[in-house]
Length: 206
Image 1 (tube, one colour):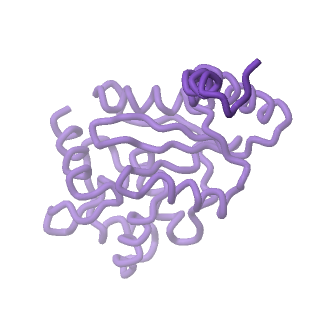
Image 2 (spheres, helix red, strand yellow; image 1 turned 30 degrees about the horizontal axis):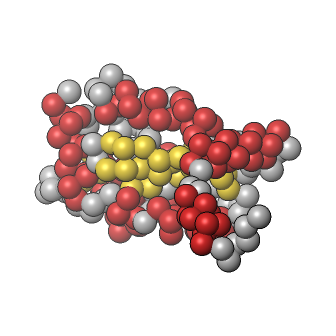
């Protein structure tokens, strides 16, 4: 008989894997299934790699609620979602299969418009009006911040339009990258200037 203090026992314990990845994956899958069955999975999320970096996608039962770029710090985004939406949040990729499929089609040049249920709870007031208009800007087209302000019913609210675009919780799906400065330069973007230029160039080429 050996004890944990015996050299032989120490070697046996050292040989055990510190983490059984397949077992952990199965446990996580069971947790997700039970949470969904009991109706306590308020927020599901997944990540996906794209030409503009890794994206975080999050969904409620109402629809897609958040798209975030790596530059925005996914861990920080998840913490804010837990505070602003619900702490009952799990990585559950299956709920976001359709979102990721449509994004893959978009980046492959096979989709020019998204057809997804959206949860708008993170946008309110004038910002929500701005984002609603952005979905009307066609693929490969752009509008200036001033044009968007006028379309949203407040022609002088150009700065507020910029804020609405900068805080857009659903970039790509709600295409704030199609809003540019009056001189034609790209302007700011939550995913960074390179991501915005990549998206604009991709759509122009198509």
